[in-house]
Image 1 (tube, rainbow, N blue to C red):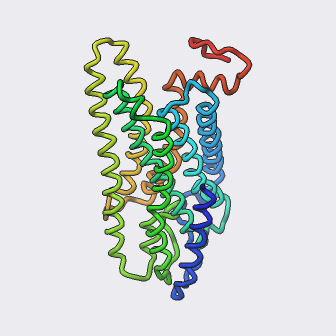
Image 2: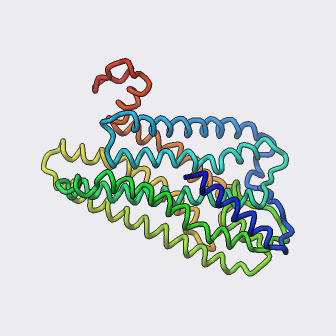
Length: 333
């Protein structure tokens, strides 16, 4: 499915760029790492290690869920898909960041920039929708446990998973197509560590009032999703606090703690980046915020899901030690 979206995105970007005859800028220059000029390797190595950990960690979570039949339920299915999306979400930006850190020519082509924006934000949109779906899933499981098996059927689970990805990729196509028609004839320096909407739109040789409309659209989408998730967890916590037994409350809280942690990390960093409208931050703070939601959030997700969940830890142990019987109370293979 990702190959189909890639083919469509490339064709749209190439066509629209050819149509726009007034475009003179053919590539952009990243200036988000100005302070790293003299010690780029010092930043390259930890970023490279983090990227490898993100890929291996999320692949481990993905295959642990797929290989352990005990985890074949809606909650873990959503977690596995979220982990799979995280791999491509970081792959859309981090390899180019690594290239920029060791290259004197920190440039990206017009089409490359459009594709990076498209895939980064499409995958981010898909993750946001999936997090909303996961919150609703937990709401039904805890607040309506008797009806949960009949509501969250395997078929509905598959439809929600596929719908999150398809909608996340389709909703951004018109916006990227519109950006590709804008004339870029002046400065080509992107004051960020990857291609993003606002830095790119500010370089357009046209009325930039559309930036405000873009900000409003993004803000409404972020706030709406965050509100649904927040209300779901408020209701979930209210129900959990009514559980009479301490053991029951602890089990219910432990089930939702990982989801809540990922939600706060994902939407917290995204809000800092996209809910500031005309407010401007110092370049170093801009870079730090971008790294937070593009690198650090995906880095901590597999840690949260594996260390905070006993079933996931057992599944991971079984994945790496398939010939050994894993004891529920054991911490070693």
